[in-house]
Length: 434
Image (cartoon, rainbow, N blue to C red; front, top):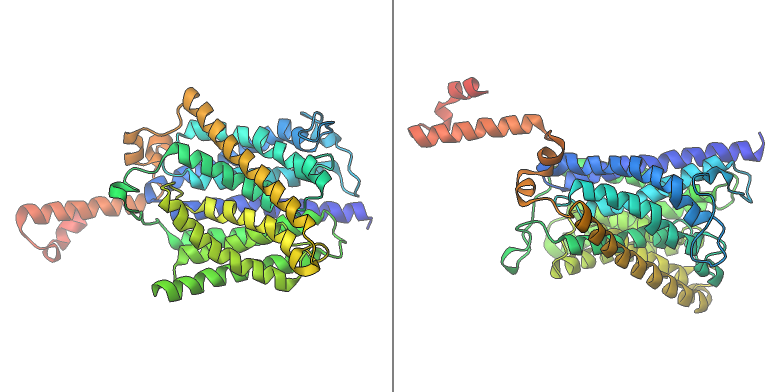
């Protein structure tokens, strides 16, 4: 079989794995938000898959991978991304599909940070602008050979900076302008809103973890690449180390192993190892993952301290560890890292690059928030937020049986209060109201 045929199969399958990660985002966010908002976060993922995919295909791809004399953005391929000229044995359509998956993943990071209080129409605008403008312009700087950071020699193999730090920075700007959920920081303290379904969220992490092998190893774009298996193994080791350090820290620090922190620790390891998975050793991947699992805990506490409400920890996972993972390349790169080769040049480039990406993402997030505010309104109304965005925007609850049980329980409670008869004596009444 010719190389182009093998590469086509590999990249299309990897793209499918990346797109399947959207199911992971949906499950993770639905499990970590309150019951009354689970449908809403799922619908936002559908916005990413529909509006986001089309916006990137039509305009974003050209800005990111089109030719451009300035090094800041592309000026070709608009509405015709399949016309790109590739230097590898791969059909353009397979490459476009793979890149669509990356663009969608970037905006899905934002979805979790603005959960439970954002106007749904505003999120549609956000998804379009992120995939059409914000993500592809900065992506051009690094992943287009003509980009100014690429010309400086910045390394970001699969997107710790391009996708995760950019998405996390934009999420920070939007979440800050959006404001916290009502009651989240009442009386100056952090009030915990219990997640709706931890096992559901954990399923989301498993799906994301699986898809990440397509995310990182698929970025070879070459089924015969000698580094493919090393990239996959580094991805696994980084995730395992991140989950382990978060799990053990919460176990010994708080006396209880925090499941949400363990899950976010694994995701943080994945985020941090993504930039350097093709450039580092297995031991370096483990070290990076271990540090990432601790960073996410510190970052979560910091974000709460400045009262920026992030229901799923997206900024801590993707933003902070996207930054760390990008810098880690300058520390652990086998050929030019500070710790591994005694060289500081790459580290300086990585620092310049990640600073530019984060400033662009944060300012872009603020700009998108302003555009949404003056057009359709940025935030859901107080009544919609209190009722829950599932019913307010979509007209259906996530868990009908739970709602039915809650109504039954309320009826039993009201009956007991009005009659003085204990609930144990109202079995017949329970059957009646059920």
